[in-house]
Image 1 (cartoon, rainbow, N blue to C red):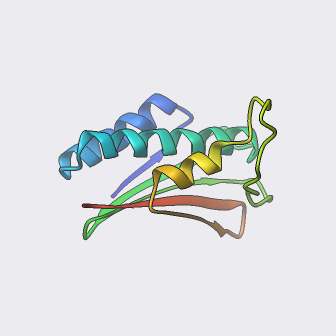
Image 2: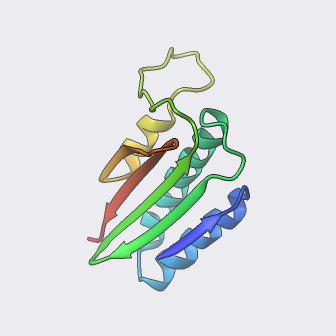
Length: 119
């Protein structure tokens, strides 16, 4: 388990890549997880109003779980964006890259997470 409380996207990404590499995940799955993490972090900054979201990376029994917690009260609402829209596809991307994702409301804010299963 690695806990990362930083506003740095680069540090969070490198922490994820390091943890997954040490656990033996294939590079293609690492790339998917890295992109999903980036989407969750950007959403936490943009919509959660949190300058330093908390990132939790947990690899246990062949399952990787990554969660990003922010202080925003609104729960994410996956939507079908306008084809010409410049944003609004992040959670659809996370759903397509991962096996599961969800939201856990917290006392203060929320935690958005995704999971990947080892092959």
